[in-house]
Image 1 (cartoon, rainbow, N blue to C red):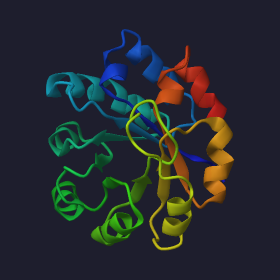
Image 2 (tube, helix red, strand yellow):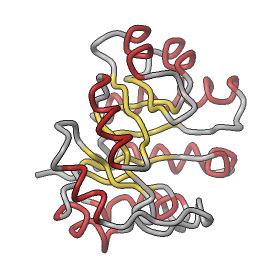
Image 3 (spheres, one colour):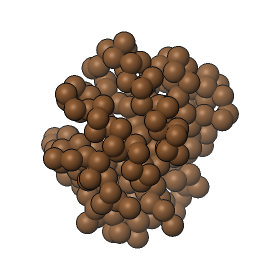
Image 4 (cartoon, rainbow, N blue to C red):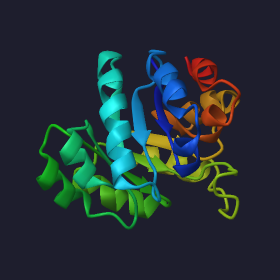
Length: 200
């Protein structure tokens, strides 16, 4: 079974001078299932520019392209969907706006929150942070126990996020995760296109 790999960006990643070249390499690797354009403090203009360049590359390589939080951007650029956080619009409302064929994902941080949201028409759930992560150093990691509990209670795929690297993938899959979401281990490496190949 192919690992469901989600690759996520942040503002720092998007501002890197080599981002487009690295993103192109990541998307053409054939390894990524879903690419998340995430930049909470990045301007809408910049996000639109990036989406217009990267979304067609993703499509040509069989990768779904979603944007984080920005339903307006998803509509403007006709991306494959949107990933929501705690401060985003409710999934049911977003589904009405985007239509049934689009992807709607949601980040969760507890089993009960995830169970409740799984009934609102989401296509997958991000659960984390599972391990300690440099992108959220203040966050106490959940560990594997909530992941194991959640995957027995919901039907939608659960994607593990937070401190993920290739050495932890098998442990996360054994705990019930359908896939993993990665930020730092890929974008923080000297060669993101090479780093993503470690998740084949």
